[in-house]
Amino acid sequence: MRFSNRDIARLLIPLVIEQLLLVLVGMADTVMVSTVGEAAVSGISLVDQISVLLIQVFSALATGGAVVVSQYIGRSDRQNASRAAKQLLWLAMLLAFLVMMFVLAFNLQMLRFIFGSVENDVMQSAQTYFWITAISYPFLGLYNGGAAVFRAMNNSRISLFVSLLMNIINIGGNAILIYVFNIGVAGAAISTLCARAAAGVIMVVMLLNKNNTVFLTKLHKPQFSKKMLGSILSVAVPTGLEGGMFQVGKLLTGRLVASFGTMSIAANAICGNIASFSNVPGAAIGLSMVTVIGQCIGAKDYKQAQYYTRKLMTIAYVGMGALNAVLLFTSPTLIAFFHVSTETAALCETIMIYSCICTAIAWVPSFVLPNMLRATGDAKYTMGVSMASMWLCRVVLAYVLGQYMNMGLLGVWVAMTLDWVFRDIFFIIRYFSGKWKNARVI
Image 1 (cartoon, rainbow, N blue to C red):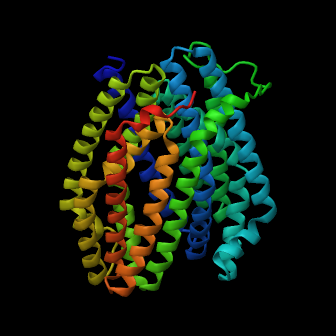
Image 2: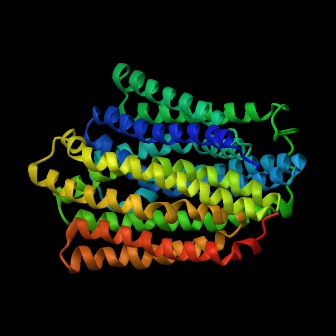
Image 3: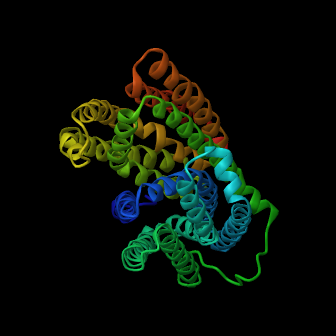
């Protein structure tokens, strides 16, 4: 077998820890910034909604690069795997640089166009945070690309190490710049910039090591190949469009939730925070799926691709089932930490019971299985299904159930889970049809 149980464990465990870190540190970051004031938190929240869309581009590129590098490794073609890695990093950095320049020039116009008129202190905080963090985009592009390459080499420990270091710098910087120097939002932004800069540089330095399966040489010479760039973009473009539309859908449903009032807004935020923990095992296994299946496809070993798909899906179901069972019984205690009213807490508990059950049943085929299809090069199919499902279920049904059938916030969450079921059906049909075997990346 191409991957032993030990190999899979070595790939998965660091990824699970890394995903857990992302959730925990994100919450800690919010708590630290909240001491600056509501305007600061609101301003950063506005920027984050835009940043998620922009960063989705870098993540999509990383996925495309990971698929190509994994398939070359599976083919035992280290030279082309290294060439693909170098072109991925150059492409990520150049694209991120263009995005950075656009944001630096038009950040205020973007904020006003998307969010309209907000209070002056909120807009000022948002503009400051947006401008400074935009400078970090090229470094973030390098980090995402580098982490994807190391995962493709079945070495997720490096991305965990760099992620841990990045988060330490971010939290430490916040503590110094916010609490000691009292520079508020600018301090939070500078911490983020420094953390991403360190992560990007470290990733590149580590990829220069010739002892790696894939390594960089002559980094100052891009040496772009039209065919190889096409291979990367054949996965990256559909994945980016899919992710971008997904975030647009979240923004639209967010506006609907806002119309339900303060209690629904608070309950949605709390349930979203708790639910982010429930997805950690699945998110980690989804990342590992790209590496494992990509290498199998590169070796043209479709039987092993099917074997590892079943194995990783089973692990995902066990992990998600166990974690959501724990959250199902502990959610009242977790909700109590947020110190909300009795009515809001009751709404949160209802949503969490529904969410935990649905997540354990329907989340894995909806978000883990499509990564298997992307790893084969079948990214256009996953894009088509995901975009159709997002608009028909997540957005349209959210308004039908939430607004017109007076289900409120629960209706929005029901629509979200129906989106998962829709995706489940089409992704499972695609997998068993075997049409993914006809997809080509390299």
